[in-house]
Length: 169
Image 1: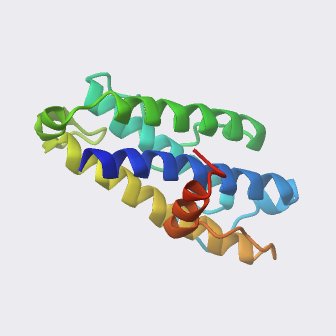
Image 2: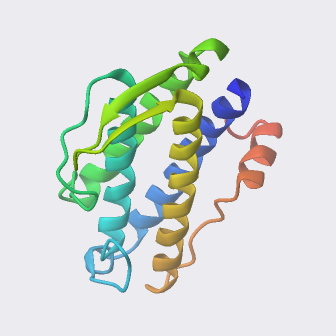
């Protein structure tokens, strides 16, 4: 499980980097434009993804990230988002690399920002984070096609093949 999560942390960075590259290529108006999407825009969707990564990581380390809603905007503009997303990607890799197999089985308790108490194993939440990220990157991918823009492939297998070829770490 540990090696799989380490792979997923690196894939997560690769996919997020590709998506960040794509959103910097579209017009600012299209990036911010209200759309029929759960988080209302490309900007809203990518902000949600960053927010939730910070929420879960904060819970796991016992330092809750302050947030009042899942649609909270943590980066006011695209430039800040791209910079903050890149930093968080690297933090997540280092975070996952700090685990050993026993730590993955440990439980942690937290209270969500809406007051719901929870207890989960680290391995389950890390897997959830990567699954959640894939889900919302897919939404952003679909929103980019509405621009219209041809977004890059984000499939795990593309990353694995690029890694095996020595093109990514």
